[in-house]
Length: 195
Length: 352
Image 1 (cartoon, each protein chain N blue to C red):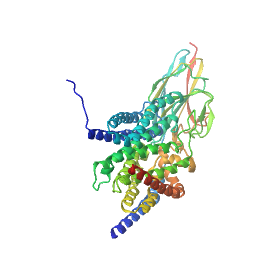
Image 2 (image 1 turned 135 degrees about the vertical axis):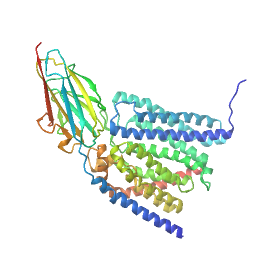
Image 3 (image 1 turned 180 degrees about the vertical axis):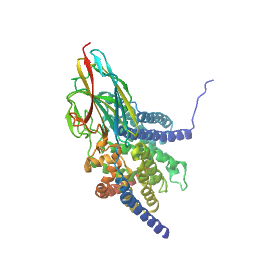
Image 4 (image 1 turned 90 degrees about the horizontal axis):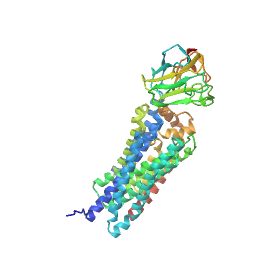
């Protein structure tokens, strides 16, 4: 009888301890943790600033996360001069963890850094490079060979976002020109002249 | 001179038991691969059919298939009365393995035609049905074979081997319940996303399997605890430890050992009515046992956020104060019902 009484007391105490820990003591430790602040940066290098029609140039982009770890980093390279990518742009280097995604004019894409919760229609084609998850200091590379098919200024827009997006630090660049997605871009251009 | 290998009836019997254990072990490997696969999809978005979790999964299928063949041939050599005693389980195992093996090409066909499929898809349902059939039939074979040894007063290796059979049933049925409660089935071609309310089946399942674990060994303390702790360990290694953001929650998760041991102690030391009522204990704790995937289920009702892997713990704990008071009574009742159901099943298995 005493043994049973002792057992039931031990069970009651253990249950009280368990539910106190799981419902009241431990959850605040996880709820009060500061939110992660990831921060992407991009290094963009063009091998030429002027070419003649028929020639190619290369653009190499290195992405980096100098902030906290996060779930996904997207590097977007847009081509506002093009109606379609076709044979104009070829990927010559790629080490992101996910396959590149080609966005066509008219595709539905996320806007204003909402990870697809706000949607707009793509106004020009782009290539999106992804890695997930993304740790502090992770670097990934994409290299493109571009062969413009008309003379004039060939423009490339480059940007990066890390998700989840909680602060302005989670996108690159953090200021400047806004694109059709309501997100900041860095613009690069190459002058294409007649041979 | 030609040499032939002949087995005695005792050796056939031993082979039958071993192969039944191995069928369960194969299914267990499949469930581990499946659980890892879900986490892999959440973390990395694998882009091909050929991923490490799929490899583990199909190694499990191979083990289960080879063991079913051995089980069938050892059963065929039984004497008539023993043969008829195990006939139903052998047939169900063969049916289960046929479905399980058929699910592989079906899954490949589905991936090839519809891209990455959701969790609730025809090939996945096929796969899980085969797993449940195989594991249930094998567990029944194991229990019937070792019944006398299991109820002996001292611990024997059978007490620990039976946990493989019970775990395979617990994990494969949990897999089925996940497919009917997780919102991972809205794909490019189909939207099979189920009703999150189905999650209330988890406490029923967990309590019933722990009750069976204790009942099969005549209330001997330890086996139900072992099954529960192994379940926590497998879930921790496939769903929590794979996600570096969740590693700090491992201590919280393993506190679940406490109610499992308490339930086991109640089953070993109390009368039947109190045993039924104590089914409420593991029932109430299902929200903790099924962390982190349960976050996705209740997020559909309470939070409506994107459950990024880095945000899973935060969303889970944010919802805790809303979810727990709401599910505590139904979960307790489901847990009690689970123990009553398991009691009937246990009696039936023992009587035959």
